[in-house]
Length: 172
Image (cartoon, rainbow, N blue to C red; front, side, top):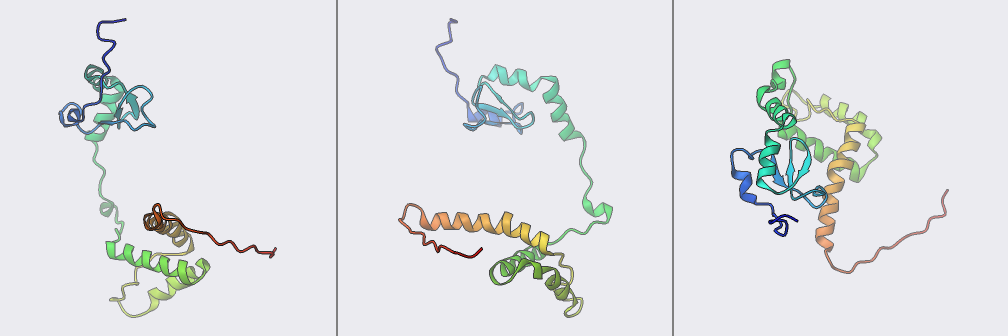
């Protein structure tokens, strides 16, 4: 056994501020830390929390290629290709409309409702450029609204006792 084997090295959060580690080094979560307490975001690998090991990793061929690929190319904006980027107001309108559908009607009616809202009014109609049909509406409900309500429900209940009432149905 080596002279320093009994000393366990721990991750130092100050390393993230160093220029050689900035942007790619972070503390590994319990899930990722099979070899140590450090994690490379570029290579997606767990590393030992030894500063020399981290320095060696930063100079490896794969790591430098991944770091250079991020720095060299900057993607052109979507507007340069003629794409329309929705404003936050359009996204909020879509969310509110999906919430209404989830609470009050069937998702299948969203196809007709979206087209109907486009026809009302003039160019100042806030729904004139809405693009929301049943597939997008159902994805918004499942992936955005439901998790938000689940988190809110968990926060409301916390450690309080609660009961669930089940209604046994005999329908086929």
